[in-house]
Image 1: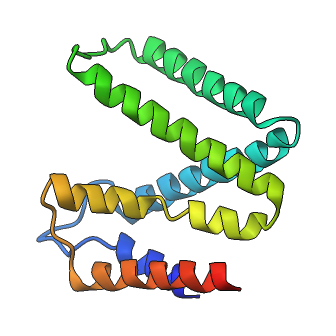
Image 2: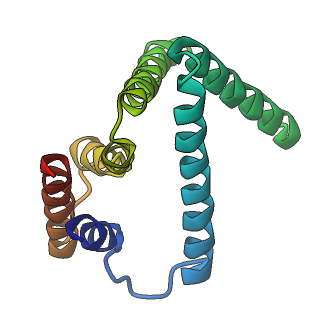
Length: 159
């Protein structure tokens, strides 16, 4: 319960002077699509990792690269990646594969419900990085939401 309330509070934006472009409907649709995508990934990774974690990781990353290349081809937008970007991109790749590997191993060892809920807290890292590097400020309800998410994660892992 803590985690659900925390997610709602931490995802709320500060009230602006006017309505946000796209409105609530677009946010709900994008949120549902994101939930479906991540949920599908987690279920597929759990099933695939039973056959071997390295193969599951290989197929997951290969699928992501193919989808990215197809999307870039359809959009026909040139990628502006400089030499200075490659270390950061490599680090991102290593972190993604590491996270997927830890999820795959944890899901094969049991307690998939705990692993799935804890891995769904990844947006908190994004919020933290935005605060650290972009100096974004969090409203009190967002701060409370993050604290509740962390309390929910602790309560869930202790159960």
